[in-house]
Length: 251
Image (cartoon, rainbow, N blue to C red; front, side, top):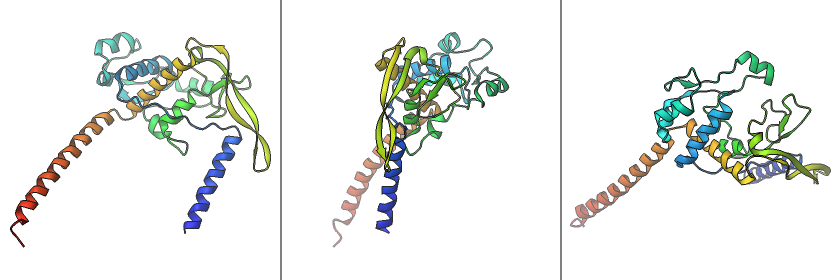
């Protein structure tokens, strides 16, 4: 059984190495910002301005953004479309039929995307963080864009003005006795309005917001869990002392 397990793990390692050698990219670890209110607020702004035009978040209401420190008036002034109300769910104004014609499929709802995209490469946040930093120009695609993490994706690079144009750099590598093109890194072609560090920061904020949106109660759950563990620890000490007092005269 032990030999079988080792063989299985080795096979997984070989498969992962072959995938990387064939041009795939490893997922980068996303920064953890679900407790960072300024980052979440910036992520919410980016989501509404760049994502909500095509993607809905139909299980999230605008007024829940108050939980990350955005006031109701700020929501009304800065984050609502003309016909939306603060209590409405985040629905994209795009027509589904037109979206399917333009992109080949209706853009998916993003409410739970940070949880549903988890895989062998890491968490859903890791996937999204890498995905939003892996677009490149491809004139063969209808949108003019492609993505190393999601090859032949129908989505264009909505943040391209912030990031600028980049192209992937490959190098020769050997895998399974064959020479393949392995991904090495990125080459900046034209600059965006942000530096690489600023863009990565912005994407980290956006992904942090998507993580929060997938489970808004997660921070409260963690806080309650910490207090419960502290209470149980105190209770354990009390019971231990009571037990010692009860048995001290019994031989």
